[in-house]
Image (tube, rainbow, N blue to C red):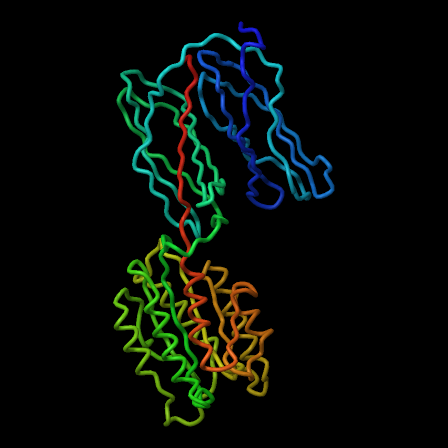
Length: 402
């Protein structure tokens, strides 16, 4: 046993609470043992969660170990709080455990081929764990930490490999149920998007060159996408174009040509506004095999009015039906993980209605005139350009005695 005065205390570099779902939390601490040739085979710790008033709502005890000159993760998963919401918390390590002389052992495990996909939807990390030694190992705990561009941890997951043969390898899989919440940077676009542009070509769009301005602004938006992105285009009036004007493609010039061809139909009577069909046609295209699964699905819908189609099949006099149906279609799209932007052009739009269609209020944009549309599409393009989590750390741990 080592005298406590001769050993440095364990340092908790950071501790964080990650919500899993209502009443369930993962609590994580990143810990460093800076001692050379001094370790602790048994390290107790306590997990505590607090509500907004500072009251303790959950407490759990656990035990781990600390090897010489090691950084390691304490991962306490599925901490339950019932119907209470945890606002703060973390992991505490009481300084009461004994230290022992222990030789530092070279890490026999290596991590290779780390690949993170779906950071903005359902994140999944794959990696390969390799045993560099001629000795088989059991019960290998492996923790993955995802950091954003600011160095803040935004996701932690843990798994256990029951056995890894000498010089063997094992594929690792870490998943998260929800998108990472991370700081966006606009200098890089590491998260590709599949974006459907949906543009109103109803009769009212002829006023003061609205449709012409929309075509120009939409084409400029396409030019701002990266080579990894795909874009499609559908225009709508009484109905959406069938087939759609341009399916998803990475050939941006094809999309721009389709946008340029958009006109207000002069035959077939009055051209009404069917926002629901414009959104639904976009959603349908994002459901085809042309959509890249690891790209973020996005719909950008522009209109200058309120929905007037489709008609209620059971009561054509029901003027609220087009609006209610559009809301239903938008909610279904958002439930599928599609990001929905809405643009209201001119003074005749219903701001509250369009704000409700969008993913959240900040995804609704208003343009008083066609001259402002370019700036609106520019801001949307900038918001799409979101840098991916920049650091992935995967830490395998093995107890000294195997």
